[in-house]
Length: 412
Ligand code: SF4
Image 1: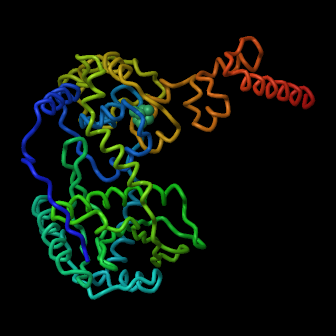
Image 2: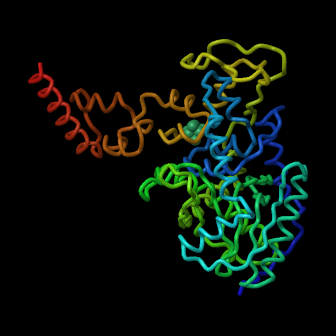
Image 3: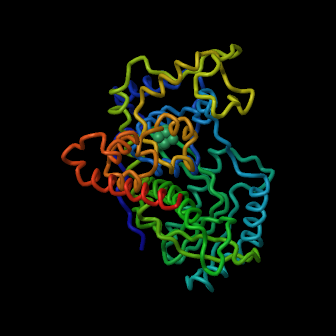
């Protein structure tokens, strides 16, 4: 049976005084731009570099990082290709055809799950234009009914709408998932169009799908907690559906997302404690890009990526050098993984040029933790006296430099 847990006491609408201070400060940091709402993809991306203060501040303030990156002349290409989107939509429609009859068969045959009689509900049928609030309320209602029905009450929700608190703001999540109840627990089902070939899929894509599904697990647990049910009500194994062997036939696998849940929970609680972080920043810090209509100052961002704006909706006006200065006032922790997960990656990579951490954690560790590339080269050349804790690394670097020189000499 499901476990009921007490609902929290107190007035949820009451905002502590210090929280309103934090909100005011975040509003100043954001400036006049509208709040950028989170999606499951952006929440999942929070886990890639959880120690980065810059990202934490920008996300907590709801700043459009893509526009900011373009403004400082380091735009990133964004979005999936139209081909990938239409392929993904077609595969999803195939999996969900006939009220997900094929999916339920797959869960039984491939995963050996006892699939009960389920009721199917599409919460966003095409053309109805149901509002977000209405869809969320309907999702909550159906989940409440299913949870109260006990282990035999199967439900399959298509296009449910979940909500997650991200840094004090509610993020609506519109998954292409279905929440299905198996063995008395709700399971999140994630449908992806990358292929599984001979039982193997691209590890990075599986990891990204697992993190995204973990966001839905957290949101689903949050909704069920509001209804008085404990976290065990939602399984921490998600069902991943992908096409198999180029044939576009769906296959299913269970993916354990406990690690992703731990990282996500830690990062979300860090965002919730953002007041501690912004208290260390300059009081006048703001990423406001200024008034619409004026043109930004040219050429302050480095010029490696010439086009500044990917659309005409940027709100230029503030000198770019000031915006760059505001970015430098926040501590970043660039790593190569940022390139896949954060819109500011090119800016931060440029800023971190010459630092060994920018080459990745394993390279940084291999270089004995020496912070800058120039220091590494000096140690390797023997032109710099190592600190006591760098002695071993310095010896290895000199050896590597000697071997390299000998190899080059013999090759020539
Ligand atoms: S790209 Fe920059 S802001 Fe984004 S996570 Fe990496 S270091 Fe932080």
